[in-house]
Length: 60
Image (cartoon, rainbow, N blue to C red; front, side, top):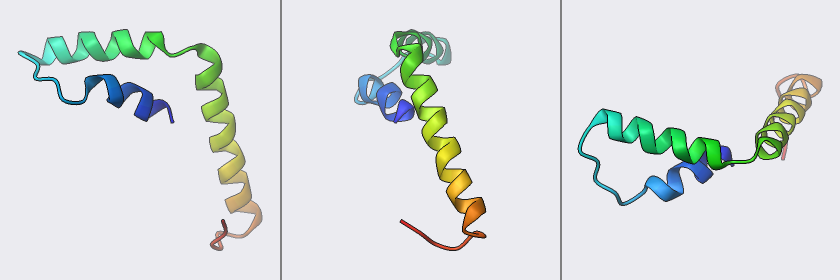
């Protein structure tokens, strides 16, 4: 989720340099509220917990 929020504004742009990419990426990352990062990591932790509990078996 966080990655898509970062990629969406950058998509379709041509950048003149690596520094320009870094600058724009940093700006977009800082625009994402902290609560969204926290939710993303909590969701991730819940997913790996399900995987551990299931013994690595497939689940949806």
